[in-house]
Length: 260
Image (cartoon, rainbow, N blue to C red):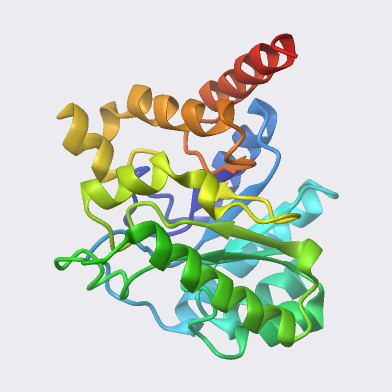
């Protein structure tokens, strides 16, 4: 899953204009991305919220054009707002990547009405508050319990189980220890028929481990992704660096295949 941020600020450096977003998306497709994830509201720690109208203005034209240029390519909209999700799906998105896991009570209905896929991610707090001393008795138990509860809500609203994926929310309201605990016990998140989406690309916990700034965290990113894929604990990886991720997947799958 290639990340296309139609926002002024981003871990990836930002792609604020439609032309830049389309250029980045096209390059990612050529490099081998299987899914594109389009976001119009920054969810980095401390980020201020964006109103629905502005978020739609940023993402809907990009999604509409991408759907026209790349028919059949799965397009995900990264949003916490049901109104934005509905507009995005009407424009051609086929997946709703909801980092608030139904924080908007209307989101499940949008997914059910439109038939869009739905990613449910765990986040403690909001992007503006989530890194203010996050605390858990057991981070894995709490994340799993939260996602199971939100999954139940989605299914009750009519969302098809076959269209749901789960994301532990690495870096979203978690300390270094919490993130490592989740990655070390990622298998506990797995549920029959539910893919696991993992987003670790360039995140702060990698900087805490390696001492590297955002632009120098590729090796750390690939290491975390490789561990999860090699153990069969992640099905989709959300990435900024598509060529390197494609090579990683090829090598991991080849080794797993050779092992019988």
